[in-house]
Structures are given as C-alpha cells and as structure tokens.
Amino acid sequence: MMITIRLLLLLVILMISELVDSGRTDWSIEKNASFWRDQARVSIEQALGRKENTRVAKNVILFLGDGMGVSTVTAGRIRKGQIKGQLGEDCITEMEQFAYLGLSKTYNIDYQTPDSAATATAYLCGVKAQLGTIGVDGRAKRGDCLSSSDAHVDSILDWAQKRGKKVGIITTARITHASPSAAYAHVPERDWESFDGQNFNANHLAQGCRDIAHQLVVRTPPIDLLLGGGRRYFYPVTTFDVEYPSIRGSRIDNRCLIDEFWKGKYIWNMTQMNEFELGTSQPLLGLFEPSHMRYESDRSQSGDDEPSLSRMTEFAIEHFLKFDQGFFLLIEGGRIDHAHHDTKPRNALDEFVEFDNAVGQAKRVLQAKGVLDDSLIVVTADHSHVFAFGAYSSRGSNILGFGSLENKNVSDFDGSPVNIITYGNGPRSNSSRNATYLYSINMNSTDYLAPAALPMNAETHGGEDVPLASYREAIG
Picture 1: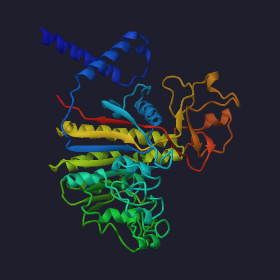
Picture 2 (picture 1 turned 90 degrees about the vertical axis):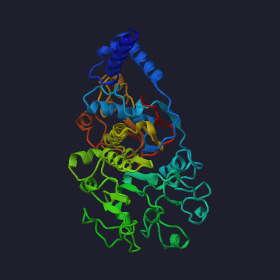
Picture 3 (picture 1 turned 120 degrees about the vertical axis):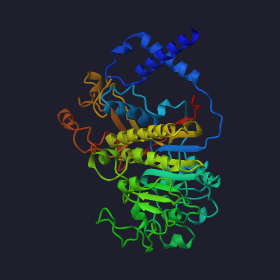
C-alpha cells in the first residue's frame, strides 16, 4: 500500500513538474495560489531527491558563452520560449536545470572591465592576467614580447592530456580567437593570430614570439579535435579560399599550416564532417569559414554546408566516446559577444538560444550513451555586456520589440515608444526618433540596431559578475 501511494505521489509530482516546466502560451493558470505552491513543492521534491556524485569525472565539458551576462541569459530565455510560440518568461533553459549555480568575478588584474583574452587565461589556466594577454601570467605586458618569455602558464587542456585524455575545442569564432587560444597558446597580444606582417611581424619573431596559429599546429602532443572558423589565418597570402575565391590567406611566411597539422585530417564543411569516421585516431581540424563562423540566424536560413554549434557538439562527444580514456572538451558560443558589440539583439539572443541548445544536446548524448553520471558539465561566461531590457513590458511582449503601449512606456521627452532592449553604449541608428518611423522598423531583423545611450563604434563589455552552472549528479 505504501509503495502504491509513493508511486502515485511520484506520478503527480511528474505531472505537475511537466505542467510547471513546459512554457505557457497564456498566464491564466498562474492566477491561483495553488499553482505557485505546487511549483515550490515540486522544486523541493526534486532537490531532496538529488543524489550527490562524489566520483571523479571521467569526461569534462566546459561550455563558454562569450559575453553571456545575466541579462543575456534572461532575455535569451524569453527569446527561446517565444521562438516556440510561448510567452517566454517562464521558459526554462537547459543550463538553468543544472543543480549547482553561482557567480564568477571577471575583472583582469589591470582592468575593472575585462576582455576575453585575459578572462580565458583565468578560467582555462586558473591565473588572472593583464588585459589582452593569453596563456601568460600578470608579468606579461600587452604587446611586449620580451615580457612574456618567462610568464607562460599551462591550461586545463594540458592537464587533461597529461592524464592521457582526449582533448578538443569547438567554437563559432575563429579557432585562433581570444577564448579558445588560451587553451594552447602563450602570447602577450591577442591580435597575434597570424604572421600577417601587421599585427604580428618579423620583429616579434626575432624576439622569440610565435603567432597563435603557428603555436596551434606545432603543439606537442596535438589537440585531438578542433572545430571552428578562421582558416585564412592558416594559409599564405598567395592562396585563395576554397569556398570564397575572392578571399586570400593572411600569412606572409609562405607557410600552409594546415599541411603542417600533424598529418591530421582537415575538413571545411559539414558534409565532410558527417563523412568522417568516428573513432579515427588521427587529429581532426575543421575550419568552416575564413574568419568567424556565420551567425546562427543566417546559417539556419542560408542552407550553407556549415554545422551548427549543436551539431558540432554532438559530433565531438560521439567521436570521443569511441575512446576509453575520457575527454576534456571546450565548447564556445563565440558570437553572442560579436552581436552585442554591434548592438544587434536578434543575433545575440539567437546565438544564446543555439548555445543553450548545444548544452542540452551534450547532456542528451551523454545520457543516451550511458555516461552522464561519469561526466561533469560546466556552463559559464567570460564577461558581460552593457545590455539591458525592461520598459515595463507586459507579459509575453516580443523581447525584441517595444514596451506595452501605455503612458509609462512612452518617452517623456518625445512621446516615442520605448524599446524593451537597450545598450549603455555602442553603434546606433542615425535616424530620427519619431513614432511613425519607429513603428515602421522591423525589430526582428538581424540588421536592426537597438538604441544605445552613448554612441561608440563598438559596444563595450560589462564589468559585473557572470553566471556559472554545473551538472554533476548521480543517475538512479
């Protein structure tokens, strides 16, 4: 009898959990106090039912949302729900379902508001450093080659390889960009991605420094899997891109680094990736664009032969699970940051949605393969942005649109409607603010620039703490 009652209770809890967790299309159910008390009870039951997993994780995945501050997570949650036809506010993202949550301080040792280079050194190497430097400690000065020679620090990727694990990096940015490069490179200047003669030149080479792309391909032992953008940084200027004939390589040293990559397998499109034999021992280098990969909003509509972040995540995990020793995988949603710098909220939030989809995809693949309880998943960001949303918008308002059409959501100065999303600074439209014009704008467009209070060529990072979530629970 007691077992039957417990089973019935569990069934009720699961039904309520499904009701609470699934996004809603209206909020009428929320009017009753019982709804909220049931939700609280379900949350408590779930917390009490968790089992602590004290075993050392065999597999570790670090998800890094570049520029994914708390405001981006919240607005991205709403956007994700609204894409599904829901109100949005009650949508529950993949990362929010993780049991362990916290905040991380992002400052560099010399800057209150950080950049992605020194923050990458912090979360991958455990050492805070000066702005613009990668894989070096605080003694290295930005752009000063000689100051960095004795300042190299190793990374979690190094530690994993020393333990015999497979290691990989996935990013939607260039594979030589600030965030991924801290896993393998040591430079006092983040812009030294290629021997291009401008950012990195013969003087730096003579002083003993090497560009980031060079450090990647000559690394011993090699990184087992690399997927991202930035292939022009590996080709000489005499070589034209395989996909875009008008684009040349960037290197002036006449080297094709792809040919030097440990005789590993090289791919440049999704078709080749899908044809790759999982479990192949040779290193894999996939570079899908000359520079950064396409925004998800553009990629999904273009039909281009370019993988999504979710697909690359699935591919990498399935590949590494063909080996027995476990793995470390860094997965970066790199273009959340770029869209914010351009004050383009549609791109930024859609990049977040795909990033969160990749988090869920990783968990599902690990669970399907029976190794979820032997894995640690961590999701965090390197910094925030001066991105905000509000305007007393009514429930379910298009997160990309205007606040509710009430007096309190009309400007006291010019009577124009108030945008839900704004930026503290950055690029902004030069068009006049009048209601007729503003209502004619397609704010769902990927080209739309949200209002920015202080005009700048590029929007800046924010200095506040960023979210951190981790999944490490026993199954069963």
